[in-house]
Length: 153
Image 1 (cartoon, rainbow, N blue to C red):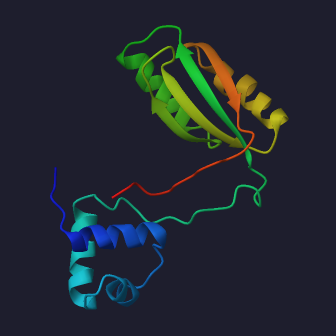
Image 2 (image 1 turned 180 degrees about the horizontal axis):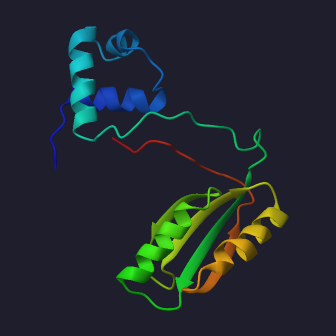
């Protein structure tokens, strides 16, 4: 694992809170001049520590606040079936996250939709067409208690 000094970690913490900062603003926040901060940023990007910069959207205002966690069990599992499943999941834009998990299920999907009717349509028209799908369990989010976009550093 890469070793990061306190300045690298300060840069990463600051960017997790506001990735829209200019290099000058970021330098001020971490108590450095812009040139070394710029060089550190480029190094962190090259190393893949910073994957990309994104805007966090308000799902409620975009009418996509109905959140479902869908646990999926495949009828059987092998390398080709797993590749086909993940390829098909990538084609469903409403699936915003997908994890291969251990336990009673094989995958956990996070799905953002408008309402129950749209979720049902996705089940019937998209997920239901995946031949390897054995069973699924839906859990509907009633309230978001905590949501962090960053990781603890």
